[in-house]
Length: 185
Image (cartoon, rainbow, N blue to C red; front, side):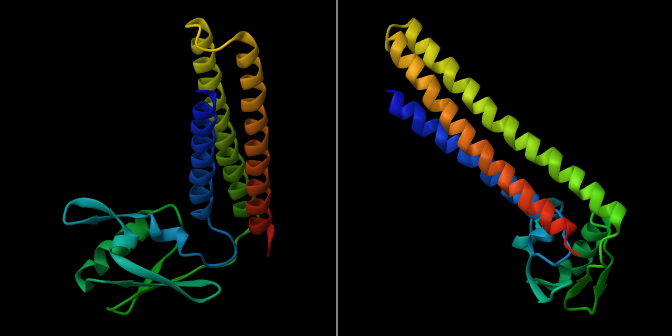
C-alpha cells in the first residue's frame, strides 16, 4: 500500500520536473534551440495547433532557426504567430521557409529572463511540495482508517520527505544550469 503511494508520489514529482524542463527549454538563451518555437500555438483552420505539428524546425547556425512548413499555405499563419509571441523576433520568409535570426541578448533582457527562470523553478518546487502534501494527507487517511499504523505513517512521511528533498535539489540544479546558459555571452 505504501509502496504504491511512494511510486505515485515519485511519478508525479518526475512529472513536475519534466514540465519544468519543457517550460525552461522555451526560454530563449544566447543560442538557437528548436524548443523556443515548437510549442508555439499557431491558428490553423480556426484551431490553435502547436507549430511542431505544422512544420519542421532546424538550427542551421548557432543563432538562427529555420522553420519549414509541411503545407506552404500555413506560412503566413506561422509568421503571424511568431510576431504575436513574446519572443521579440521578426520572421524572414522566402515563400517556402521562415528564418528567425536571434540577436544577442541585452543585459536587461538577461536579468529579466533570469527572473523568469527563478519564478518557473519556484513553481516546480511548489508542485513537488504539493505532491508531498497530498501523499502525507493520504497516509494520514490510511492511518485514520486503520490501514496502516502510526509508525508506518511516520516512516512513510520521512520517506516522502526524502523524495521531496531529492527532487527539489534536482530542480535547483536545472534552474542553475538554465541561468548559466542565459548569462553565457
